[in-house]
Image 1 (cartoon, rainbow, N blue to C red):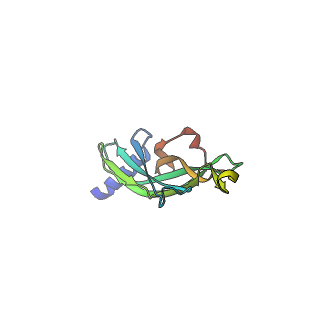
Image 2: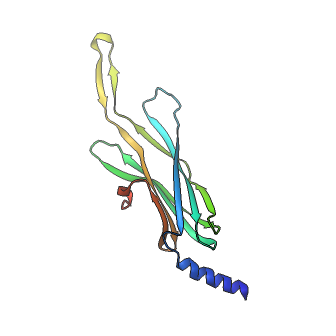
Image 3: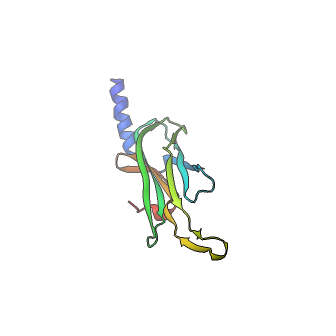
Amino acid sequence: MNFRLSIFFSLIFASMLSAGDVSIAVKVDSENKAADSKAVEKTRVHWLNIRVTNSTGSKLEGLTLKWKLYAANLQRGHDDVIVEKSGDMNISVDANGRFADITTPKVPFTYTPLHSEKSGTSRRATYKKVDESGHRYHGFHVQVMNGDTVVGEAISNESLRHLK
């Protein structure tokens, strides 16, 4: 009987979670993935180290962590931000200020910066401008969900909030 009561009270308590009960701290890590330092094309890998802290008096189970990494689309004529990679995972966090540390998968962002290329030799050399292209890291959005309710959120830039 005690087991059933504890499940009942945990379900009632979980439905009463508010946005202040779960806090999220996000650290963006990155590294270069260049095989040749003189190569024009750049690849930079980004991932998130997320700490979800539970300030309530009971363990939170059945939460969903949703994350998105955004990229700036560097194609000429386009000035938009797109979702490069997203994911979600089920998490649980112990009570009384305990936390859970989560690391997202590494996501490569490959782009070519604006540059010029030389053709010809010395006196007759000409330079041709090459536009930037590819996807460069732009930001992140992380949410902790209890069913359909957002109980914690972290975002790198408020303009990313309404992007799909």
